[in-house]
Image (cartoon, helix red, strand yellow):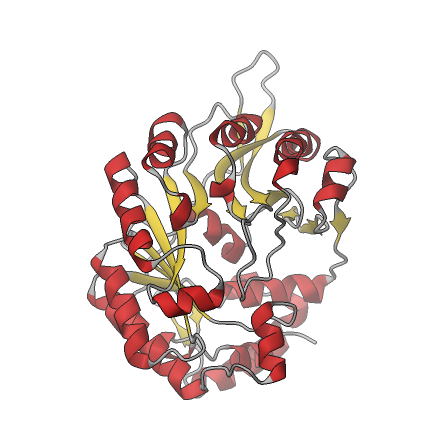
Length: 390
């Protein structure tokens, strides 16, 4: 496993050069765009086809940022969904304008689907916005699998979309793939990952298919019309993914994420290292100063709220907070800093972790942080179950 540090952290506050010298919190900002052309078979993220509500949604995001952001200044922005690339460009510009900052952003990402990436769209993103990173959902290059999943693009369109983004000047590109698809073979998966690597995206995210209960695939699994990939096949697919990306210089820095040096996702890393972040839009989640909240998954309710009083505070105790830190940090090659373990849980943790170290399920990095070895990441849930506080 390659152990590379995440990007250097930024100061938690910065002085604003105004007559009043206010101090502003540096914050990660996520914006959930809930609009999709159609629902993919595997997706359980909140989305809706109600495009007639796009304008009202866009303005409500601005109001929520004013209400919630307070004296915060974004240093990363991630526009996800849903399908953010389905927003008309004038509305996308308006959405971005609502989250204004005078400070340079460390990273500004937008998610996009291949069928939305035209020359006009790509050039607008590259030349007329501050967006410097595009995360594209390819999922697979196989035509039969794309149709089965309900994707609206072809494999050829995905390749063309990458070319279009490059021609427009996008130099920080992340692409998603899914493995363990119904009927997918090891050779089929190798073909997919080899194809993507040959296109040289700076970042690759690859996820084992999850059959969420309320999705179309989840229903099909319960009815017995599809089958999950066997554990053995999933592990062989994962092993090939790790080997193939390593051979091409990608750093495996989180269970499902691989980056060329210097291209680790700064925004997404905040979810794994305990940084504060604010989520805007229906279905978005936030964590600030140890307090978590979420917006209900209702576009109408969100718009009716006018961006205020819509969130639901999550009730967390010390155990919940520690378990969150434990689970997220051990998803990464950076691992867990033992000094982050609260004193009240330290004795129990040391007893369990000592056994896991002896069995090879936990190791220390040269920086004396605890990590799960790469070859055990795919099955790390069993290790985490031993460590979490109940």
